[in-house]
Image (cartoon, rainbow, N blue to C red; front, side):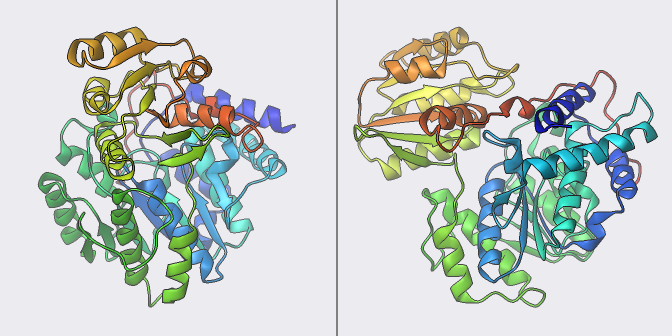
Length: 430
């Protein structure tokens, strides 16, 4: 099997859709020797900020000398970004071997209940981290928490960044329902730390933590940290405070010095989140994966904070299943000009619909449509600041265009998921 063939096999697993339930993941892990039992985890769920919080925790613990696994999703460009050890991506040869092993296990599953892409990926990651003898794994949920494939582990700590509206078709249309799914990662007597502040969501987290006798720590948005942070934006201070509270909760199990914390936060790197690129012309391009209402508001606040008085040109591409009208209402007033582009996704919103809605509500802003991100970049005025946002998929495409020397091997299509043709599977043990 070649690497290209391995990626094609993973891509074909999309035909089994995206579903909730732990039965397949547990069975696939058991057939693989239950690698999760050899590992220690910090399990991270939430609506926004999961990736940044994971990156901070990974950087801090790596500074202590530990071998740290990092599992995140989606990837920006390369599939291999999802599975890293000490911030080195899994190699192509390792992907091929793990895919081949998974492939050999599939005949043990009924044809109408085959593992999905994310279920297979989860077990591949567990095997990789076990084989590399990771001392700790920073383990991000995919979607939700309670029935997410990652929830077969028992962590040292559970972390819930925040609760906001996103993926309502899967998680529910109220904050209480979404919080119930996210709080499903809470385990009996295992500490849980959250930065959630919405009363409706926080009450759910408190109730579930109390029922499971899990010590609960809460971080407030106004929290400040006494360390320099490399990631820009006021919201990253909250994520950093959450990471620090998690480190503090685990000091007995894994001691961490103030120096390791300081160096970890000072050097943490997480592309695609308020990532600022400077072109040879001096023009600045800000990339941000804001893809829901809360993310759009965070981006708007960051632009005002980091670039006061600036009216940037914005290039926006948003998925159809997001609340794009509300996102546009938040972002459009900040811009001098909006360039709408399609996201390279089956779920992209139609640029004409985006543009027409924004023209009705924001007549003072110049609004244009372009058939691709490349066309929009070529047509963008040479203003001092261009913002590209609306989807991590779009940010990944931008990195391929703007930094081809680093991002030259795209597998962004693997981020796509499709709805199951049969009902969602619910694990009765949960």
